Length: 405
Image 1 (spheres, rainbow, N blue to C red):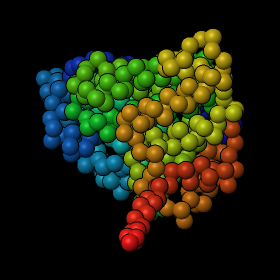
Image 2: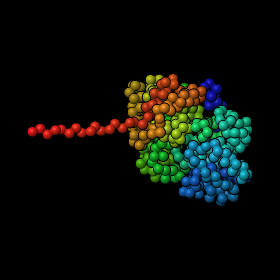
Image 3: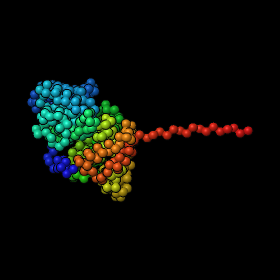
């Protein structure tokens, strides 16, 4: 962990110029058009393309005389073969910059393409910390969900379909140069995606705040994110057209991204990555399911930090004891998940898979994450086991009583 900590804690990490508010994606297009790129690759998915969400950006690029092409084949948990297709598309069209437009998968695929184009070797050899010698091509970002924070982070998570696992590429030079947080692009998100991505952002903030690599900067960003999420996520979930709630959730996701880029994450992510690799569980949903279980395990070691989170979330007040505040925060996370319809179990999870899942999660966490309380493999298995689908107990058959004469 020490080596990984040196990367995220002490080396300079660039921060993108942020454009915030309705229409900011068009303003980003105006800015990019003035940068003199030869041709820009827009990386997105087919749904975003069909819905016309690209129009503000692309109209601005056209008006500014910028050349661009669209690669709209990204799928959830973009696998290596698909990313290779994107690399080939970039080179075929002689591009020199990328706009990542979409959710976490589009962001991560764009980063992987950017690194691989500059460092032509197999993608699995680029996984890890600073494996590319040459700087990635320039990236700009337009997130369409408020969850991953990938528009400001140093990491990209991609899927290895052969080995059924997630690979993480880490390089501070992948951070986008500019990003647009445009809430008008998010008003059509289905409630379940709003919920899962929102808890994804909450998980980033919490794990950054309670881990052992926290800094005053990461703490400030994490606490701000938690406050915004508890204040706005329910509104964004129930009233998806509410631009103010959408914008504040976008900011929360970005602040959480700043926080975990410096302070990293923990067991929730380590376990969620295994669920994604084996079962293709959406990352935000996997985080949302595991967050309460991991927090309850970590509770004895982080009472004071949970207490501060309770105050930031406005579910407790200064002056109450740390023990009381910590329990209030745990209860508030449970209640938020319940209000957002987050399931308490993972339907795909199988008992027979748990030992391998726990082994891989522990390997990831213990070699890369500053966890606040250590899990043995056996303990990790028991925590994952809490997410097993609940078996339905059949109702007892009514006993017919004999009529007495």
